[in-house]
Length: 234
Picture: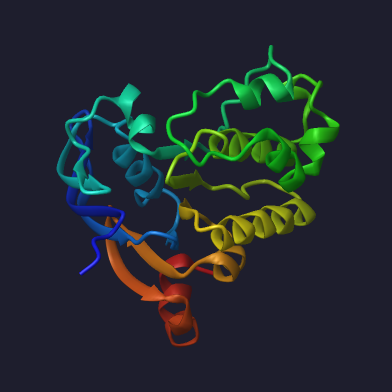
């Protein structure tokens, strides 16, 4: 039996004395696009940050490509093959677009060369000499995703990639994620935009009160809508 690329079992996490994750279980197979759905404040971003090791008060099991990640220090997580694009994007204002792209180190073979990145994101090619924070919000999101692709990571983790973006940019990011999937990239994302997520995901996890309350493939969406409306308020 093929093991999942990412396996999370009974994951608990704390902010100080506040217990925020309560036994999260989930898997991500190689080549899958997985979306975590849920209202604000239920633990979606916390789950991603705990997997990455940003939140260190954690117990349970996180295995990536068969390796135990709980003992891996934060500065080594990317070298293990996990690439994280946080909601705040983290673009460096003093660097140009191209300098931002070239900043992260290559951690493995198979990263996307600059020419391919510019073909995937034509806006970035046009603005490559511009300071990073002179870009629009949508272009900054593209840049945050693009610089991770260059590094050779095996799992791309995105936190709210469409938050606050114009519909035309949301559509473009969706097209990019479909292209990455066709190339075999594995993607885990948190997303409030349910309609966007329904066009790109293979499977969904529904989160509430710090744990996963449902898991289902995209093909089951029609019969799950009543539950989603109740939990998400969509």
